Length: 101
Image (cartoon, rainbow, N blue to C red; front, top):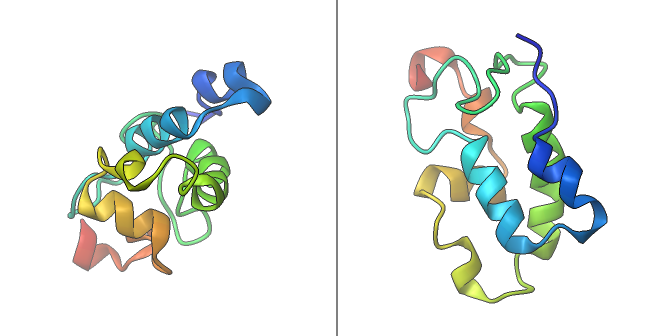
């Protein structure tokens, strides 16, 4: 399976909202440990060289920059693992396989 950018991201383009980014991030990031072998939404296989699917790789920097635009409630739908993957320095999908899978 070849992972592609989520259609919602492509359709919204430059007008994508923080709420849309949060929803897309939640769909393309593992909600909890252990992390599956592939993205829960698009099927991208996680690896050391590609720990994020294409959609998550685009959404993460955008959402990190824009997460304060709508207040602290904007990130409320995210699980603790998704929140750490977004705001922290680590990515659960890049952790050693024996810890996450």
